[in-house]
Length: 224
Image (cartoon, rainbow, N blue to C red):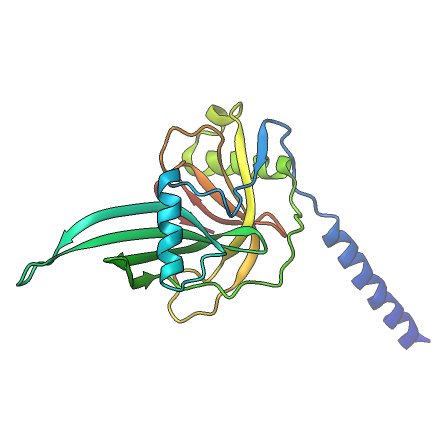
């Protein structure tokens, strides 16, 4: 009988613990915040350069079906050694996508020399089986962002009436760590809606499952 009572008590404690943990809720801020979607075809380079980039990939048999172009550079380059020959250089920088969503840490750089592929910088993604269902609400993201602005910049009051934008995608937690396996999670990228800064500071990335801050960037990147 005592053994039964102990087992029952232990089971109740486990159930209570699980119930208590699942009941934890993040606070919300009902101010202005909008969810944005940057589609795979939403290239941010000049429209006239898109077919040029497409041709470079096609002619060099490079699959670009999951790339969004975010920068295109074209220049004539001269070597620093004899015979000091000149060559045409085209550079295409891309964001990688999987499941139709942007990988925030998935940037690749392709360089073409005289229209021929020369080199690639960055490690391609292996994709993910994670779904595209979101957990955090926009109100929760706004509250998290305001709190972090106050925490790192002491400017929460300054931005309390500002409008923010939030993009849902994937984040590789092992990005930048040498010889590490890609570890994609569902995440959010939050910035000011109408930022005047080219880099859109401040920026914050959050894990979608629990709202944990991945890093905050105001020009100085702070990891949690």
